[in-house]
Length: 350
Image 1 (tube, one colour):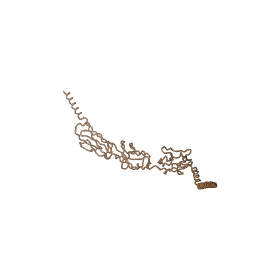
Image 2 (tube, helix red, strand yellow):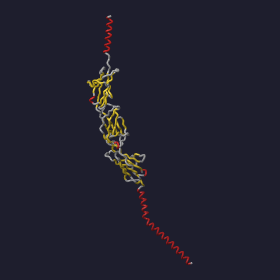
Image 3 (cartoon, rainbow, N blue to C red):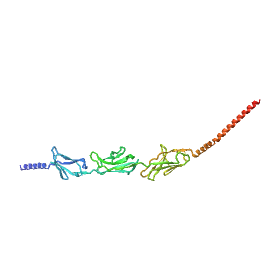
Image 4 (tube, rainbow, N blue to C red):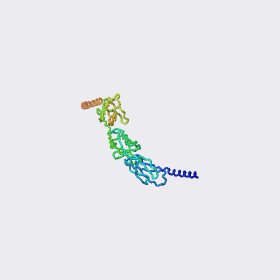
């Protein structure tokens, strides 16, 4: 009998102990949109009670161990983040354990820095890259580009944080800025400082011919290319032809000497369009093409002089020839008249 009472007592004590030591529900803090946010974003903290059942809970919120909201029926709290809101947040239900602390970091909006390659000014036709660097650990930025108060032209190429202008034009000149957005978030980086892009035309080239066209076959002709530039390290290129232009090199009759092309013994095969341009290793690396000049070659001057002399002689001799013809005509006429008179005399005698 005593043994049975002892067993019953031990059983009751074990039930009581198990009830007292039953695990309490756990609380977990969830942060939206992220534990790292930027100033101005809306942050939501939610206190989830595991195995909460159908009980109407009352919650307490803590920041850095200090009570933030002592008693509230809201499982969520929301606020607009500022840097002072950074800290460790935890929560507890009225019948739960206190959650593990979750660290919230609120940062100022990151700065954006815009760089241009190559350095401004650039020249028409050059490839220009504008790179936007955002000082942030986030790597999911979507970049936005502005030129003045408008979006950049659709003909430009955007690849992540780089805007590329394949062949710059003078219309591309202006003030450029960039900034970044995070998809699904109401945040953007600070806009970069405006960067001025200046686009200049390539230096002009002017082609001159000595002597003036038309020239005469057999003459020596010099074509000179003048590039309007402060640089002196130009390499000159010479072209002949209309549709399929051929670059000229020094040959039997053609001599290329820096800015001058010399044609010796011009003939009819040299009648064509000529033009020039400059190339160099630095920027600008080329000049504009010169205007096309048509070179015309006429018959040689000596042949023209011979024909001129003959014509001049004929013109000078014309009065004498005319006088001679008149005299011959008069002589012939006088002879005819004399013959007629003699014929009449003979008839009368009979």
